[in-house]
Length: 132
Image (tube, rainbow, N blue to C red; front, top):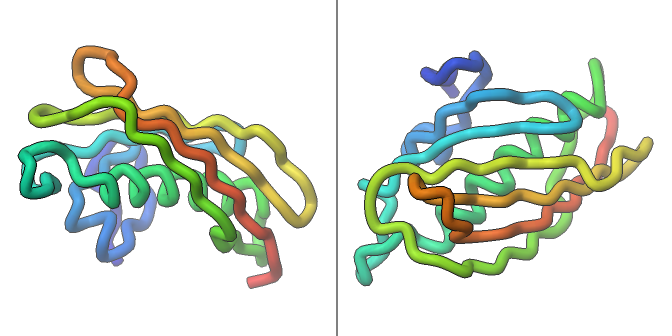
């Protein structure tokens, strides 16, 4: 894992690094990141659905770890995503917002937009919080 290259310094997992995810903001209540479309396209020329899901899950996991606090961690339990648009160039921006911040579970909504501000994917991630 290597430090992120974006405005927010955090640790990137190997897949996050390969996808080019850059973090803008990370807190327990809200997280924002961007990701390039180039290098992450499927054979149709648009951003791969798995890349959307990885971006969403990465943001939710980081936010949930912030919520969990020292000595605790978050593990993703469930992800649901609906891809409603097509990003073929530029970058996408994901906005992750807490729905529920409990003692053992945190749930997040993630909205992903293209450079034009059009919604291309919406996801929901549920995480379980546990001792590290």
